[in-house]
Image (cartoon, rainbow, N blue to C red):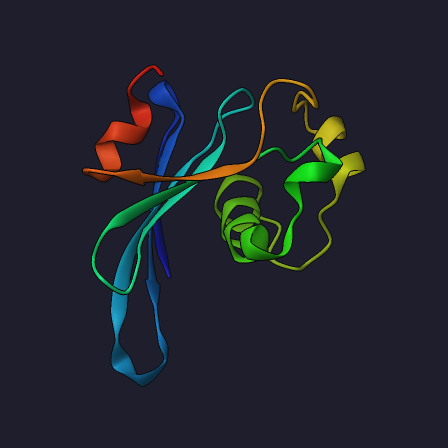
Length: 114
């Protein structure tokens, strides 16, 4: 796994090797206000998971993999020991937004103000 982190605008880029020799490019937006994980689905469409590390409603089943990648890239936490208490301790806001999934034209669109 390789990771490039640009502190000036809180972006991290991560390439993750997959079993069978397949690779895919994934993006992580490291941000206390707008954390998210961006990845291509099986049809090649870009999806964005907006994350809420300090809110219980954000830790739903379909987001688990996104949280694992996000915490590994942004906080160096590569085990499954993340929860809302850790999110609050790290400075995430519990009431800022809801966890959700969006389709994007390109990964860079995740940085556009909504």
